[in-house]
Image (cartoon, rainbow, N blue to C red; front, side, top):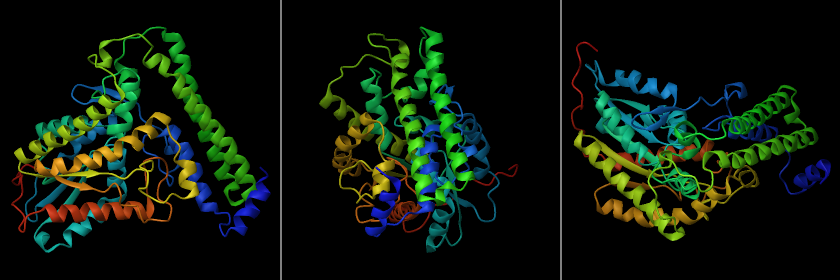
Length: 412
């Protein structure tokens, strides 16, 4: 396993060493340990995940999101001369990432349509890492209560509804509850607190070590050396593997065998096939509920099924994608089994009046790398994803746009 021989082999195969790709790999590996939304372009020192807090309606939230729900009310006040058409993106981390990377492009594409000749477009994001249904339903209800009136709500989901819900079920936690990795840490009745704190500290220490290794590697420019980069990437991957193992060991404190408390929800009968059927049913009913809620407030609802790496046959995977896409085994298995079932349930959503865009196979002819891990993607894939969302929105909109949902607020 000599680094020089590996580099020579790559050159012979026509795939020479790529320093930029190596740098992205470093940033992604650090991101998986330090952020709920991996970003291979971000400053590594900024990759620090904010602590979750309990929320009375959503289960969990993060402080900055608590504030944004109130602060973004500006979009529904004082719209006088050219009232904005407000598009709201909700869902998990892929939704948050889509908003962060593509909000301007989505707005530009929409305003190019003749129907928006007299309307500006504002694209707002309320996607949250680790959110899954029915949290999006609860979030929409909460935002409407605060005074939000988006003209269109786009829910981007699929991965979390399977991976995190199945993870809950495997821990003996009700699959409809928020992801227990976040919720349980805050809400669970505690035993053996000192050992639990030691285990949690190990996870944080390993994440810090991974960040330090990544920063040192990039600061020294070692990503430009095939030999040094291979050596340092090996060290970084080893730390990430330790971190993943520490996460699995921490399960003993999150959901001890034979223990049950109210934070784990009502008892449910765990059965492989029946549980998967239940996950799909919750996904369908949550979307129908969201559609009804948005319609009741005069808006248009669009449900988008996102693509994901472990959905077999959905993309020709590059070597880098395979290496960076290895995730929690339970998550990967849930995606492989569950995504075909979500696709099969799509026509039911359409029959029940939901505007549904199945984008799960959007990358099936995309040869170049776009995934940075098992579910997040950037680059050409993200651009294609944003364009497909706009296409679906334009197809769902009526021939003439309705008037603004919120009258101008003189005090705005």
